[in-house]
Image 1 (cartoon, one colour):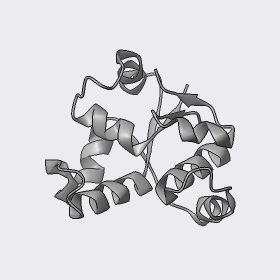
Image 2 (cartoon, rainbow, N blue to C red; image 1 turned 30 degrees about the vertical axis):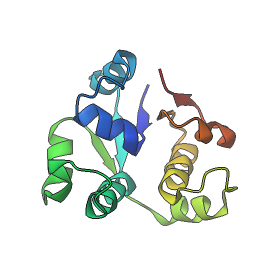
Image 3 (cartoon, helix red, strand yellow; image 1 turned 45 degrees about the horizontal axis):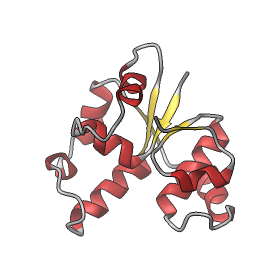
Length: 129
């Protein structure tokens, strides 16, 4: 099953962090599934890096999108339909990046790989273990 990867899960995966379950890592690495990454996640990584909240070497790489695509990820552009939908979602979650990912998951009918239980309030399918 294809899926959208939450920013936090992406960062954990790229860092080979043990807090990410083997099951989620296997989902991401499965060649029979498309792992989508929203450009909003790259934007969020860049912002958090610039603020000093995230320290990862790849945050400043100009070729990060190409590196991710080369590793088998599918990049998802940020489009007006998702922006519009995210703007009208209830504020169960205050993070605009997470609301944008929820909107993308809803519009595309994709489950989201996320450790954030606040996303459950939006009625999307979330894999977290």
